[in-house]
View 1 (cartoon, rainbow over the protein chains, first blue to last red):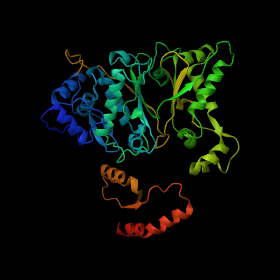
View 2: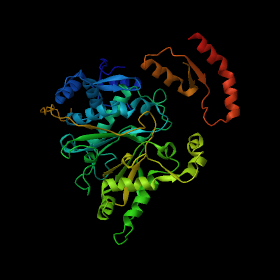
View 3: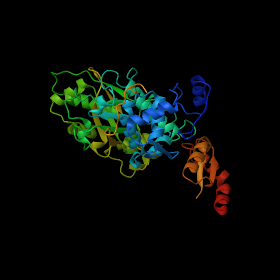
Length: 362
Length: 60
């Protein structure tokens, strides 16, 4: 159903049931996207409602500002969040994101939205600290959900019909956080991706649910950083992961601030962390042959030694977020499709955004 | 061209064919799943659908 179709219902309760019945929700209640609410949200963007942001597969629906605003209203977004939602949709629509394949695959991948730069506050606040990937943060919850509703209602991704994920994962409801730039000992992640520090950037990575990595650091241990990197590499890649079996794709290492400081005080930069993690995620070809099934044929003619799970170190993204403690997170990804499940970064444009009194909770 | 689609993916095949503007692309249905069945069972499946595949090509 095009999201800009008009539906009629006697009241909002019946409208909600209608949207559920039509498969237009994520299974949870939504804010009813009345014409007034959607128009007010579009107005706040300063953009034309019929402006095309991109095409979303596999249904190849056209994502206009109006349709994206409809999803944002349904998701419970404040109009302040729209520049981030729009940037996320633009990223998803980039051909190199391989959205059609990402939506259709049997793998559980979901688009994770990472926010860098001033928009973390001006279009949020998007949480980056304790429980940033959990409940209780309106911007994180609703921005990620708005993208999901776009993927359902514009992209046509519906479980068992066009979204064939065998299990899916909870991040398919919402999956969004900001980098904890102020707590990070490293320059912001987007500066490593070619942007200026003052830019606001959304990076989209299709990836698995976050996996926790425990490391109890010890400042007196000269091998502290190396041990931490080994732990992260084990969490990041083993012969059960797509990255290891496909030997492709990207992944995210989300360092807790404590772990980031362990690495920084040993002299590591983001680039040297990526390099060392890449080296530590070289795996035995013998294991690939033995456990890789049909994929294990890749090394049968040359079975000695190791192979890299990631083609280059830059395919391991490194960011800092979370509270202060003994944990970091890793998110492997799928590694399939024409662009091997690449991350895509888009600059957030808020120049046209209008702060309209009374629209904060629209 | 003939697409081979397993039973569980039939609806997805219909959806994608339609969205790509090829609603009538020839398709042949396979049981699900076919991965990991081993050669003997794959040969049985192949034998059961070969005629349908050839007919689809012939009708193109």
